[in-house]
Structures are given as structure tokens and as C-alpha cells.
Image (cartoon, rainbow, N blue to C red; front, side):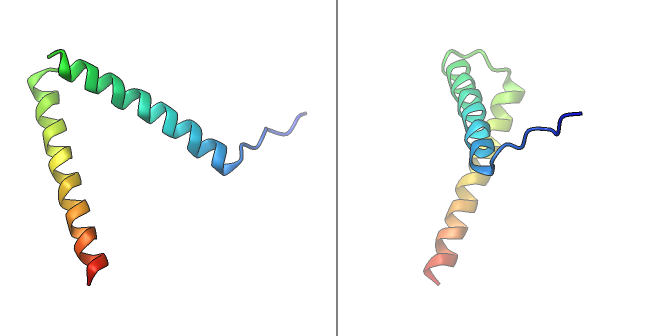
Length: 64
């Protein structure tokens, strides 16, 4: 019986980031082409708004 291969943490994160970047690029292309449903567009806008708020809050915390 062979032990399962262990993937180093850095490699796992790099692989996950590649998958995430490809998904974001595909969503951006679909969004630019108008292929997203109104529900998906609404969800994206809400997520973007949340992300901006989180970044803004983190920025103020760092400054304090």
C-alpha cells in the first residue's frame, strides 16, 4: 500500500489561486459580453460592494 502524496502548502495555494483566477477571468468575460443572468449580476455587485467595505474598514483599522 502506497502512502498518499503530500502536496506542499505553497503548491496547493498556487494551484488554488490559478483555478480562482481562471474562474474570475471567465466571469469577467461573460459579464462583459452580457451573458450573466440578472440574478448573477446582482450577486456579483453585492459581493463587490462587500469587498470594498471590507477593504475600507481594514484600511481604517490599519491606520488607527
